[in-house]
Image: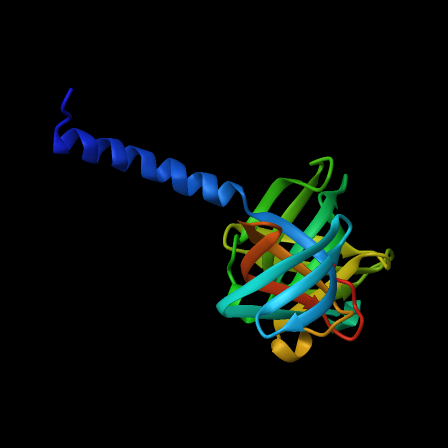
Length: 202
């Protein structure tokens, strides 16, 4: 049976989104220690063995630094993974201080964060920092409201800053949130985060 050109075009148009979606579904999260760096070619030692990762042209390198509570500045855009408290506040488990290029990314407050999905994630701007009995308290504001966040001493706080190829050194720990498999143990990514000064990104 001979199929019309119009029919074939329709079939191709329907098939393409499925193909693209399948490709995106294959992206993986990687974390490991840099074994070697050769230009844009990285070798990582992960808990599942060594993998090779190629950086795309103009790939973004973020350096991740450990920060203390008093290092959080008013006006910074942060992401807070927290557990809701009975009084309506949020008790921070981890705080990521975003690089300026991600200001406004996924802004807002939403449930379902953490391994058991009982926590919350709030991406917002730091409005004020005040003292409290249990650690410190942040007031953060987003477009639909605000939250008060208690930051206990054991909360993980880290800042993402613009990095460079100079941060990609053997022995440094890196995180890749979206690594695309290219076959035979090879991956490709356009964004890599690397711990600075021995810090292990969380």
